[in-house]
View (spheres, rainbow, N blue to C red):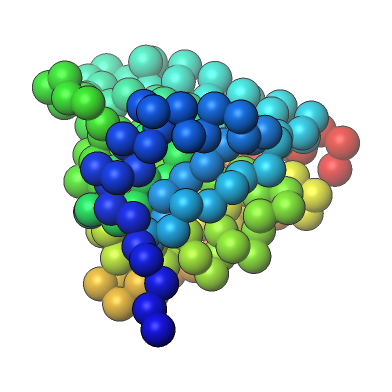
Length: 186
């Protein structure tokens, strides 16, 4: 027996029909499966907001920025996945309905109760999609795990966990996100 996998068009039609309207929290399409996401708590909301603002200000300050910082939008990956990263940076592109994996230069997942799934399900998904960089931010550990060098098999060539100092994205290494600002209680 094989499970029924939804494609993006099915998922979009279900959303427009209001199928998910009564769900507490969000839903995402991950490799053909509709996944319920937990509501976002205090730490998750604050860290996501701080990252969005910090990256947004830094990107706007770049001399020649062809990038845009987004939060919790749909990132279409192929025909069977539509995650909603907490924060992501894309190349500015012509107006279209959804951003696609090829547009993304950085994806950030803030992980409190979802760290295992973000590392074992989403990290390989983003690698297979060719997204150049993923940050998994764990406020409870006051750490950012940086994934770089995506491979088609879902692995990453370089994975480093940062617990102090700063973290800088590949697309603009002059940008520095200070971890002490993200995790002031740590």
